[in-house]
Image (cartoon, rainbow, N blue to C red; front, side, top):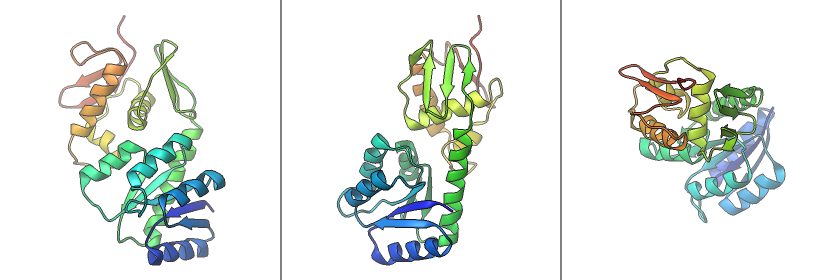
Length: 227
């Protein structure tokens, strides 16, 4: 069973989630404000955080930024906002998954299991080397020619996902689903923007690719630069 921390300002929802997750054998703590939640998460070091966005003192997005500065704990955002742009923004800011209110505790528990499973799989990943590009997934560090790359959370996730499939063309819709946890059939703009940012940090461009290659009408692949 897992240690779960719930940050939720609605007392009724908070009490229900704590009670039902506890009944399932999890160790659960909760807070109704961002600052109380941040302090207790740092002190307790739970396995996963369930985060409401509509907090009374600090917005969920700001809470996530503060949390990511001190912890890599997986975060499931619980929100009444089902706008795709908001969901993408939260995932880019460091959330690992999201669930839209109203939700059942069974659904929430399944999301928790999924993010913990992915987290455990990542922790077991070896260091990936593609040419002079080195990616350490367990430490979330990427270097190029022995120099660290300053990557956002999603830039790192995208780079690592492609590196694990070195030489394989990956469809944009697969990247959207697996890296951003968005449904198949979503738009490509989010992927394309992050690919553009990655290319800039890798010192290349679409016109002069090095590691990242676009296969028109198919997708993207990461491979060693041609000599």
